[in-house]
Length: 382
Image (cartoon, rainbow, N blue to C red):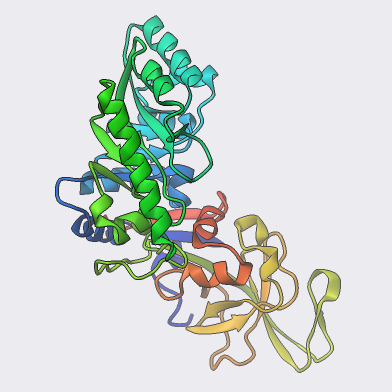
């Protein structure tokens, strides 16, 4: 075995992601230092905590002081409730009215962006003899969901907030370009947000929590932190792609490390073709190392023939098409021949997920989210 065969390598058979809970705690503390005192931090753990595993991530962040959790779907929230998570939770987007019974039953705060949604929630809450907290979603310039902020829907918001069984607890919006240098548009969104809240206040509607800052907003616009902020990608040790330099220093550590194993090594003569389609032909005698990871694990087939995996501390190019469960790399130029069981690094603390994102023309969010469910999550630290 080489020096790269150690640690978690002995407790996974093909591929795993190692989730460093100490790095997660560290990132939360860094975010807390960057956040205005008195402002609560909502932890975004939607999409299975960006692929990291929502339950373990949620427990660690709650222990670290998160004020609540943000989810995408009611099912994500219900799953955490069933595992004993009791902190405030909110869904950020659409919940089908057929699921409002679960929202009320499991006390999951809902985003409201139309009167019809509020009325259906109200009916369910009254039917159960309960009240449900809602967060009014304002569209300040994202163009996705939300009440308009030009004054044309102010009265509709008032009607929604005064329905029986409805507690208008929060009001929120989402920045479209806080991670770019278009600060003028971000400031315009913020002004629209505050203006609509002011108009609602004149009509007797006041909110306990106002929140608009996402990860980029937290780092770049401390004057906009308000009552709460929503920390997402930075919790996991990654920066929003293309984000200008933060106004505060922050030291983030990647939480996810993706590893695989060497499962076979052979030497082939020049002229040998490799993998489906025969799109790679060896121009020399080549050491071909097969790795137990493929596109069904989340390693995109678009990385075939060129993208490099790290073996023995050196980058080795993938040769031929990536298969469903395996891929092959050229290790001819390594100083030490790989051995069965040696660890292969896809990305992590020593090699950023941003490299995969750049190669695929996407963003680091998608890279961690796309790691397949059959790839074992191993939690360390914490």
